[in-house]
Amino acid sequence: MTKFMNRRALVTGANSGLGQAMATALAEAGATVALHYRRNQEAVDTLAAALRNFGHTVHVIQGDLSTTAGTRQVAAAAVAALEQVDILINNAGDWVDKPLLETSDAEWERLIDVDLRAPYLLTRLLAPGMVERRWGRIINISSIASLGYVPGEGLYGISKAGINAMTHAFGVELAPHGVTVNAVAPGWTLPAAQPFPNPTDYPQCHDVPNLRPGHASEVAAFVRFLVSDVAGHITGQVLPIDGGLSVTLPKGR
Ligand SMILES: NC(=O)c1ccc[n+]([C@@H]2O[C@H](COP(=O)([O-])OP(=O)(O)OC[C@H]3O[C@@H](n4cnc5c(N)ncnc54)[C@H](O)[C@@H]3O)[C@@H](O)[C@H]2O)c1
Image (cartoon, rainbow, N blue to C red; front, side):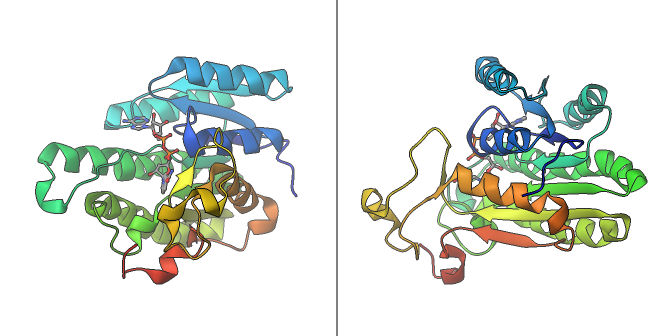
């Protein structure tokens, strides 16, 4: 698998869950990584220390992605720390779990701001440098909730469907410049700290074709491939990583 010795990556929401796993995978592959976090400095400091102990170069960036100003500040801090951003992982995201008629204006704004505007703005701000250098990789973390109806995840699905459209459009517009843009759409996925799931422990996954949730290590390995040189011909795609569940949508789960 390609090593990323000279690549510099920003991972948003790197203090937990999928972000932590993807940041770790990129650092292990040799990339210099900026770990973005909003809250829980202890978690991100612990991760940074662990990665540095293994000889990896990491930076830590704090910022709130729910505002335009906060998002611009994160982009500027990433460029200041890394000098250039070659790989952007738009991972940070918020969530609402309720029927659409019960959602509020504030929830709409929060989901659209964090899950859609921030990835859009970070791409707009950081892609020009990639275009100039004629190499770049952008990964957007979508969800199977964007591919069909998932109970309670209507608003979340709307924001992630926007991510998918953004992935198609940026993917096409940046393709001539050596920059790929792809989204991965996970189903329910366990954080790296949890053991790899055994189907017998997850009876609630009876309608997932492979009968289990995903694991953050699987998303991280796939993303590591997508940002490598060998994946340069894959762009504009929304790629489910869900044990086959999206194939069964929109019948529900
Ligand atoms: N774990 C799953 O089952 C699953 C499934 C599909 C998609 N996803 C997507 O994966 C991504 C990571 O989720 P996760 O499961 O690791 O959850 P998580 O809660 O561990 O990670 C979410 C991250 O987003 C950050 N974040 C939230 N609001 C923010 C804000 N206003 N400003 C800056 N950062 C903010 C959080 O601090 C956190 O680091 C999200 O985009 C989520 O929608 C997760």
